Image 1 (tube, rainbow, N blue to C red):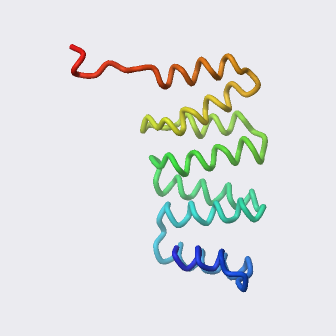
Image 2: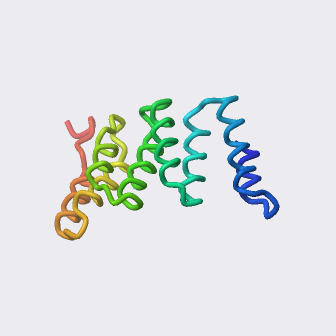
Length: 133
């Protein structure tokens, strides 16, 4: 992964060289972390379909990763314009991630400021603690 990141910053590396490094890294490690980074690279380079496939693979490798779920959900919403698919991805969270809850609210209430405000306030309302007994 470090090589891939270094190549991305190098003015002398081309896109195919970076992709080849990601392929080698993915073959050697096969972790969600590497695949997520590769998907983000592809999205940044404008290859949304490859990014989508890689996010799907990263989530298969680590179904509980809120970071992969967030990135993939935003790709579906912002690049593909598919709010329904984005919500399907974001709402499958089982970790209770605030990051995903906020992204889902922004997707669900796009254009509805009051609905979004109410949803966000519900996320931050104080929850009783064990000391409140």
